[in-house]
Image: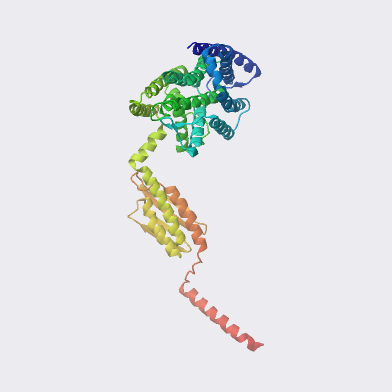
Length: 495
């Protein structure tokens, strides 16, 4: 216990001293984050490399413990071989974040570096546990561990958008891991987590709104990596059936924010690595909360998540806790008002998704049938059969000197909208569709595109049609052809 108290006190004092020093030095060097009045709402340039103070305080606190004769120092000495293997991974994560803060890195480069660091951590012995202390199979253990660590790194990084949020969320998650270590009598986990919690507590004094220094990527990625490692160490000693369930709940806020961002951008067909104002803290700001209230509200939610995760340590309650937590999470997401998920849910429940899928399948079948057509009349038969399936009630098509039309009823030009599709040979396709939402398909534009591109390529491949001439012209053409035959037969006689 004295070792924990000494380690925590040392980390807190070091962080409290080093944070303003880093702030002063990098402020004088001009390495600051400038406001843009969109996503960066602070009023003045602020240094963005606070992770330097946290990383230094964390490492120096262990150094101070090793200089004492406390029992915890012996545990740390025994763990040095493992820490030495893990240090290159943590160092790589910190360097990647620092380079991004100083120079700016492409998202792909950052991701590759994170994957490399997670792979090194796996080689050091960080293996995600699946069920009751059992790791995944040999071929699955590495990718699952890498995904977990990369997810934790980016989760803390993405939630770092309001003063004090990332540091505070990291503090609550680390404290939860510390309590789990104490409850499981896992002294190694307790010694690993306590100094980070103390460092974040000392740093939060300067990072809470209005902040004088930001974590930066070097801080958020470093904290996320350590939290991911803590979760693995926690699960390896867990007595619950679902080994990673408790750490997942403890780190729920940053992981949930990352998951929501990925799904939102996927549904909107936006770049996954792009920036937007759809994060949880942005939604809370849009609801009218001040930055301080946003941070305090998220702290409260983290406290609730920590309570759920610690209840998971009781093997008799884990399934009940998991179900209740999922229900509370769903209600929270609904409260944030994400229209993407609401619309996607309605599409699934109302059958719109099946309608869109059916429309795409109908378009593919139409294109295939039109490609197999052998004559111009065959093309018309295919189009005539397909246009009604897409809600049109009238079609007129002209190509190769011929005109076709068909109608499913008496068209009312004042109660319909029209589509005109020009063809390269001077022909066209005209479609009419009644107003109203009660139509079978909504893939009108894809159908029009498929109609033009496939029909035009097919018509260009077919031989031209010989158009019959009127009676007088046909008689004149016949006399001309006869005269040409007679002339050809008589030409040898003249020679």
